Image (tube, rainbow, N blue to C red; front, top):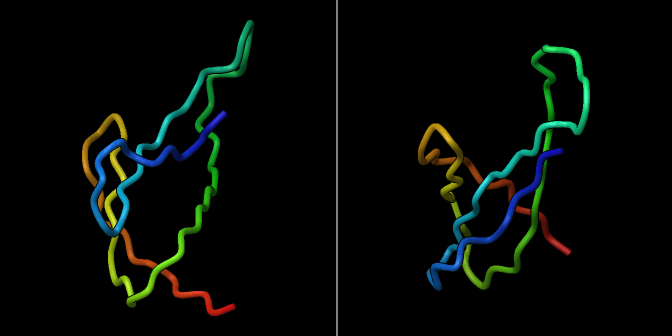
Length: 67
């Protein structure tokens, strides 16, 4: 189980923390690819954002979606 949680830091653009939880009980010892997304409203164009996981900070490109 994988999820993104917005950081408590009140900065813009928002930063996110990537959390994962091991399955309960017995599970195969394999690496499973995953994809996760999140959205936030932005008055200005955002080029990059920061996601932090167990291996540190990662700067990711932002895909702009117009509604």
